[in-house]
Length: 312
Image (cartoon, rainbow, N blue to C red; front, side):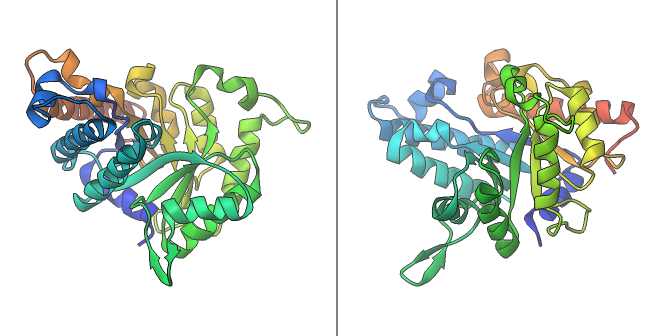
């Protein structure tokens, strides 16, 4: 089964179009938990990576029956060096073992053999002395489209060969995104509309059983009008929607990203789940994360019902 179809089936099964972002930093871990897993203290990058993996594993255990997916942002692991990258790989493998779809948030882009190497690493296979192996157990990767088709084609090729998928940056959630993405080109379209149209074309041959392509788009919840317009413009493009929670967006801001069936998008929250324990005094961190994931699910469900798009 194509991974986009599997993701959608998990969303339907759990009645929850959300993804938990594991953008985990050492300072997000409660002191009591750190003392438990590292009684001698954290003194090295290896110690930090060990503690972070223990935290991620506990969160996955607490969330795997609620959320259909996790998104693992590689920058938060690169900062801890080789041990951090091992933690990145281990976190994705553990999440997959618990039945979750896994997104590698790597925002890769390059051309030629370099792009092919990135694509093989994250959503394909690497040739290791004649054996084809997975470098990282990701079902999806995020991709920057700035270099055009040359930088995206290696990823769509791997997606087609292995049933994996990508999410291409189209309209991002950050405040300054409009500096480039809202500029207009000669035919009157904005840059993000141009990129959206390219994403539609790049994924036209990879549409699955739910009517959505394996080539998806990143569309920020912090720009609800643009998200709603893109939903109409790109009916076969599945959206990864950042910006919920810590960045300020609520369920009401993102209903326009969904289709009439309550499908077509998955909403990411990272810090609001990772650090939920900070706002729930006395509640264990895993329970606090679970409670926040349930609250988020209900907020989005309510917003979709109000918009006449209840998930079905």
